[in-house]
Length: 302
Image (cartoon, rainbow, N blue to C red):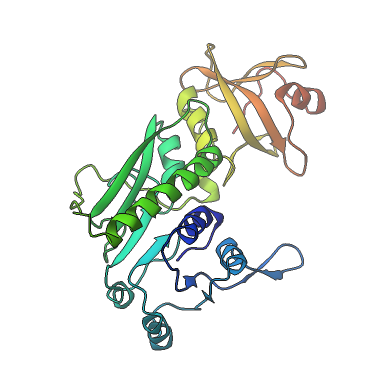
């Protein structure tokens, strides 16, 4: 059970193993793009290429879908980046239902664990497989693997690494469950932290925050939803910044040079705008931004 590309490596890993995949469950096709043409979820495309039957229920709780899934007769449900399963579905498989979560639970329970780990300046995260329960991301833990976060790594880059590492972990979990080699460990609520869904406002830069906190926000919201600010009436996406050992009033331009780019003061330290994107324009480095826009020392961002 899964929808986005994060789930595809896990599907492919299990398909290459000696386990039989009875069916794949994913979201319905959705209209995308300017033409609003129907597009299939990445998991559906991968399943069809592997010759695996695909189920795309509009709702998970209907008696029709419950009966259909029950008739599949699966011993185990494997869930990666999918919806919350109702209790009636959790009770169907003989071996239960397991989930792959890209954090070291109970840290970062929720929809955006990769992003929040970076936004909060963590140097380490990981992969957890656990038994699903009615409480979100709180079931008994099966396996965990620690993963270091690179000092300049973005959420998009970490996402790509974890989806591959996760596929190996989920396959090992399935293997052990099939062989009866698992003793699950109850998950404590102590130390639990939330990882709520991101919104556009999550990426708004507060220049009164420290340079390091702003740098982490930029990394953690790259590529989605993206960090942003304004210069006058001009909205500006910020893709990459670096810390600079300068100080001044928060949000004020300290340097605007067509060779060295733009340096902006924060609540503690300053940042250089290394990669920016004015609204409706292509991405550019800070020096190009200075050459093409009015960015004067003393102007205020935000």
